[in-house]
Image (cartoon, rainbow, N blue to C red):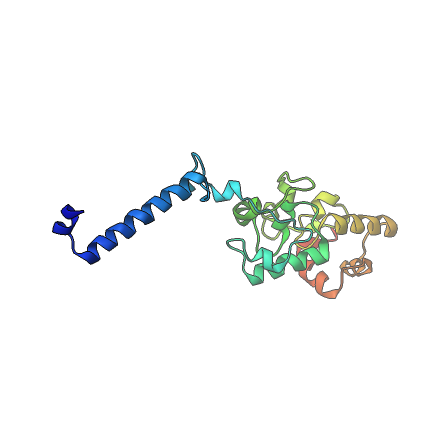
Length: 198
């Protein structure tokens, strides 16, 4: 102790004693396991994307959930929900039928959604496969071809075919108004994409 008296003042000795006691307590706490420690794991080993993957179901996702996805703001989230309300989602590739979405946008966000239905991307599932100015003949198109029309999902395409079979053929685009869920506004949105084949 005399050695310390010659080197340190009374206050410095008190500080040193405090640090020694504090270090000793720290070692005891760590040794007893009161502080949780991963054996060989560090924070650098965690990959948030794969270890904590969040996937949303397009059939019941909310606006709040959609806006957490990079690249989707409130407007795009609203467009997705409006499409779902009008057409429903048969699979996540139906996202490409939402106004403003194409293959590039789909590829950026598809990992955020659960797979359901047939998720294979086919030429007809992509609106970009319709050449500019090309129209779908609603009197001859298959259900798959009808789903290439923006705003027409699988269910609506089947309804169009059922009505076509009932009528024999469509005599005017306004015949589509007989389908529940297709109103004047919906018809105007798709009018420039369809033809009667005359």
